[in-house]
Amino acid sequence: MERLWIAVATCVLASGSVKANDWWGQYEEGIRHYSEEALNKEFPEKTRPASFNRPTFQCPDMSPSPSVPSSVEFVKAADIKVIAALGDSLTTAIGANATTVLGIPIEFRHVSWSIGGYGSFQHVITLANILKLFNPNLLGAAPGKTVHGMQAHISETGFNLAVTGHNTFNLPGQTRHLIDTLRGYEGLNFEKDWKLLTILMGMNDICDYCKDKALFSVDNFIHYITVSLEMLMNEVPRMIVNVVQILPMQTLREVQKPTPGCLLQRSFCSCLIEPVARSPELQELVEVNLEFQRRLELLLLHSDRFSRDDFAVVLQPFLKHADPARLPSGKIDMTFFTHDCFHFTIKGHEELAKGLWNNMFQPEGGKTTVSSFSDPIRLICPPKEHPYIFTRPTAVLSAQPPSQASVSMLSLLLLPPLAFVAFC
Image (cartoon, rainbow, N blue to C red; front, side, top):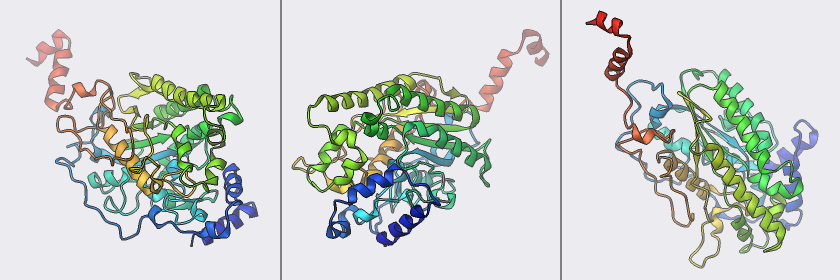
């Protein structure tokens, strides 16, 4: 079946109806070194059977607010009506449930950590499937899979508008596409519906850094993130944006060690994989990776730059120190990685989804980071004392939205003296 998908995609790309990009060239170069047997070898431990089922997730309070909140500080999980995602191949979930190397170009968007809508929480843990437990009518979750490079309809992608192979300089284009899609989507109230967007971008900049250090500089990374967030803030009402901190990527070099045949990893991220250990080139890249993290924190932490009463951007740091899952022997647990030894299988996507969900209900300064994916993340419920998505550094100080009575009293207190007398 995977061979058929890829054969169709290759024919379409070759016909010129869809413009191929560098990703396909990297993929073809990688698989050129595989034998026919290796191309067709199946790895069932990397896939999720359709019959898989798990217990559901329950919280004491899964209800929406009594009325639609107007302030971004008081949005509960069940108040979210629309979910969306932007990013690269980690968000398109490329190869995430592939059985062979030939399935790598398939984008399993429906199981993507931040927006996959396949089945329910019992079938696969994604941020969208968690939110569907609170609001079954959630719009935007990705319902299907696509093939990289082939045109896809929104009926397949949902509002997962990430593009495999994209760098941060592509993010403003993705953002424009999202804004226009949301504004014109039938059944979505653009002005009144609360929207949750997740952005994870920058890893491809690290992978390509040695090819063009100016284009993939830290300054450009921050510039294009800023441009995109300003577009959203200026044009989209009632939105919460999760900006997820990028991974420390050096440990991905270890993923190739248990399986020397992971040639695709070298194709997809040569700037990280090719330098020899302790070389100046590798040390520079590691420092650039850390600087990406530091500058993103400088842009978003303790800042109200991207802030309105009904709009917030939150840096979610759970990946900042993340180490790949390991076996008791210390070797990398390859069931978390696809056949290219670079992207995540469903097991990896589920841990990302849980880490993001937990960060959303933790205040700035109290957000957990994952030290290792070896220990499964335990989902938390929204705290009883603050059942809202944390969107402001000060939000923890205001556990309850102001009641109508208190708002009315405040209005009276703010009236000029003569006006107040007239009410008496």
